[in-house]
Image (cartoon, rainbow, N blue to C red; front, side):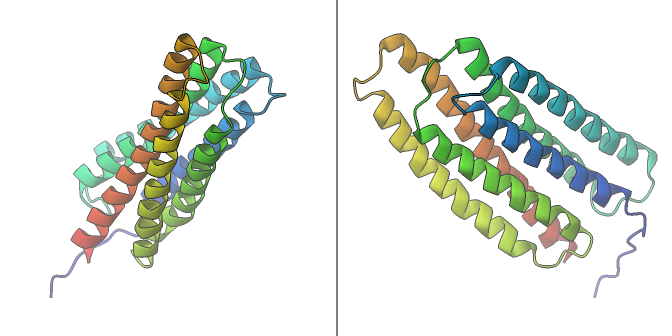
Amino acid sequence: MRLKFRPIDATFYDLFSEAAQHLVGGAELLTEMLSDTADREDVARRMREAEHAADETTHAIVRRVNSTFVTPFDREDIYALASGLDDVMDMMDEVVDLILLYEVAVLPPELSDQVEVIQRCAEITAEAMPDLKSMKGLDEYWIEINRLENVGDRNHRRMLAHLFSGEYKAMEVLKLKDIVESLESAIDAFESVAHTVEQIVVKES
């Protein structure tokens, strides 16, 4: 049996939990951006602030890795998890930015279904991060993320079919397709985070 020394310092776990909470906030702003009554300029401003806060948390994780002799798990995995969480936030920020810049007057209702998937992914990712400390019960997390990713894939295909149905003008199709693809990328980024967590658990078990 392989024995491992795991430092008691909870800083890394706290920082990963903090990073995941940023995603919950980002998903809430993304939902707000889809509202017909949203002040898009204001939502986009708050999303940029949230994205900058998430960047600061990522930088704090990197600094902690660089200044810590013994880390709770492999440095490469810490970097990968921090980067993956940051990628999710970047993709949500991109969606909000595209909606603002493209000045899309009416957003297809199907976008709300995809944002609901993103919200759920954010919530269960935030719930899972504290469990990194014990490495217990995380299999339920990545199984559920995989299920949600499959739901997102189905939503994505339906949204594309709707875009190319002839209901929208060509320029609107181009704008909306960018938004749809960025939403899909956000969900894929959540799956990447879950895959990284799974790899960490397998290595540490």
